[in-house]
Length: 202
Image 1 (cartoon, one colour):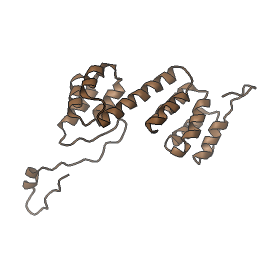
Image 2 (image 1 turned 45 degrees about the horizontal axis):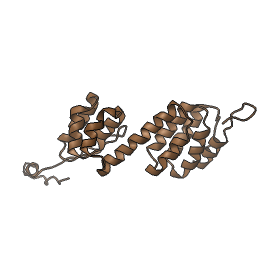
Image 3 (image 1 turned 30 degrees about the vertical axis):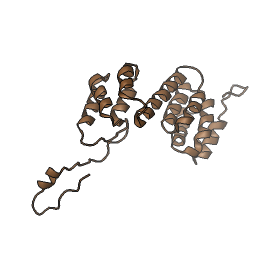
Image 4 (image 1 turned 120 degrees about the horizontal axis):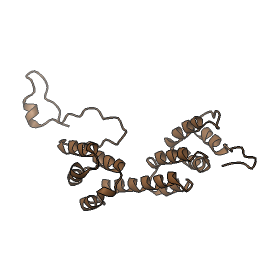
């Protein structure tokens, strides 16, 4: 948002900084605004002010990046509001795609998006969506489709690796790997060294 005299109006960003408990520095500096946006994304009580700041952000790639991060946090019913905060352009188009693909992930998680739809539509999925699905879905049939027909070797390998696990562990893209989980079978317990307590099953 720009004032009539051509100076940038940072009122929304300044209000957002106060909302998240941050001291606002030079808000004409994109790095400073981004720092505040990143903090606000993690604070649901600040999301309303963050949307206002995104709508007034003159740097459209930065606005889009903040919106896409926010899409990962907000409930599904709020995603349209996040997309609507962006001006028309490539940044908004990307956010629309990300919102749609997050909806597909939701449907995969609750079983509304079956293996037939995956097989039919997999080529239209972005590599990001394929990789997220490979790390999160628990339907072995869907994982088999991804292991066979995923776009990249990384997608195929991720799906195949999870098919080999005795129990599925969801590992979202970008997240730290969870601590090693030992899945202990009855046979493994029977092989425990004498004098050591048996391993507890997971």
